[in-house]
Length: 576
Ligand code: SER
Image (cartoon, rainbow, N blue to C red; front, side, top):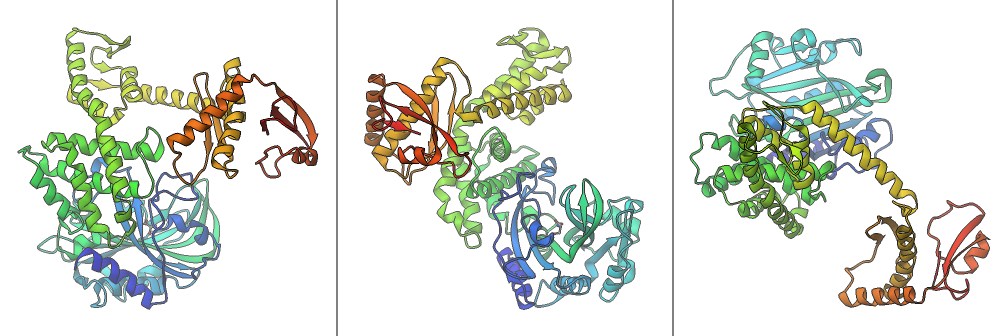
């Protein structure tokens, strides 16, 4: 079975059992600023798990796009990836443990489902702790399908984290039961709990499904009570299921990755002994980047954009190591689009944007990438005492430690991701003061946040005379844009620094050069008139009668301030 059929079988199975099939939410959460990306199928459904009725009913199923980057260093082993799809079925206060477990077993083993060998299945259940009691109910249900000696109660006493799922310190949570599949060629047979835990560590068994029985709610990390409903949240990592079904011991040999892995082998001329691992990292990072870009992420130095930038750059660096020309990134991303375009239809539509963003990023990275090799030379020189500082920043803070300022400078000025810099430092046999770096980084963030807050206040980042002039110019620009483009133009934001002004507005199409010229001429013409800038206090209704622009809903009181530019309010060029 190929991955497309596996995904399809999962959804059909639950559709037949009364579930509405819902589309994947975008990777970037729409209403949850606490996480950068959806990391589990349940994340976009949190409001419904908390009790809000879902428009499509109480039984739902889907395949949700997810990104997890906390295990990025493990990518390239057999099972870790940064992007994955999570197959899931949900009961929002409808069925509970009995049906959820029964259907999991049926889907995994029946002909209608995945036809997996039940003798290779192992199951874990919640052993109980201060938050909730031991889940004997799930144990008893599982006994109907699997021999008792292959069902293990896990808690900290089992040397592993308890079978418990929560999305963060606040929100819905509950005990879970997890299903593992034996992927060894010979088959492991019956195992004691200790043997099973060892097999798990050695990736001889892989988790293929998790059923969470969400009936509790946490606040600040503590269970504070029960949810209005008893819910089921299940999650099955598609890549791992495909690996189990296709009899592979790693996800990169499945049809989800194979075409891209083959492409990389075709392009590479390196005999590097780590080339398999590098290839897997490149494949993973390109696939994730394609999906991130298709969901609107663009490379930058903050938040989601920074993660994307890091993935692209890391892929490019590994490509260089394998002697793959970075411009081939485009062809590689095309392989990903081909693989997924029937399932995620937007990929084809966004193809050109994806290519363009990747291309631009590779172009931008050319400098810092070359700079990494220079950086190596800097460090070697610094170690030998040939040079000590670059642009007044010391390279080393002591004989065996690279300075935090230096690494920070790389990031700030050249956009070299910190982890790349640290890799180079470690390769050079030096130490690095991560704590000091984190402190520097945080200081910088706090500073820019304070700066941003200041800028939001009336668009004034600076109170110098220049800024005042720019502020006046935004009013002129606002009116000029309306004159040229139409009255739909309205200010969405503005930002002034001592060097320039920025004015945000929406307009359906890109402005033509001719339109820009017209706007510019109008503004300059008004400036040349040296008109007075006046301010009056009026009642709201009087202000409206003057025709002054106002865009802020009901936010103002009965008396408002009107700024106008011109000899009198009636004939003023601009009134706001
Ligand atoms: N939320 C659980 C998980 O991510 C089950 O979907 O594993």
